[in-house]
Image (cartoon, rainbow, N blue to C red; front, side, top):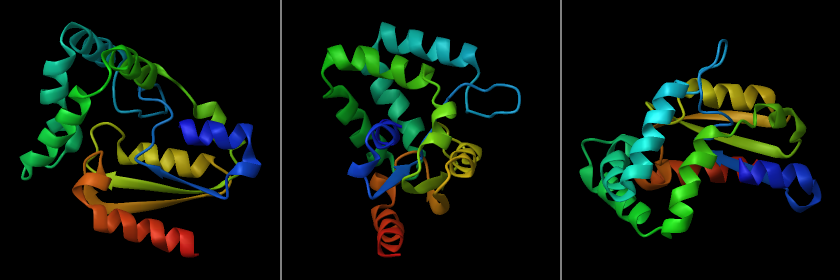
Length: 167
């Protein structure tokens, strides 16, 4: 979403955007499936606040969504653990509680929305929602699973990006 907001502010600086499993809002509301109830997010944020390192190591496996490749979850967890603690304390709250749905139609930059299957953080419906509300976006559903296809399926991710950028 940060790239989209920057493209809205200064569209002349962006020829195109590629969004990987984006979500403008993580909270479920009537008529919108963001992936989490507000109660679930509040509980998740409490866990993160009480023990970020433990959440980073355990939660990263679920975020990665590739249980047959546990090393990917471990790699993601270790990257979370290397995050500056002052940033780590704020990033999940800002991310999970933000709502940029009203900004989607404002971004006229040509955009590729890459969406994976079985993404527990940003379900497929979210990718469809984003692409449908951005005036110049196209949705590409990947065979990859989980929230981090750049790690779990780099070749597929790169190929989708190349096709978009070459078109």
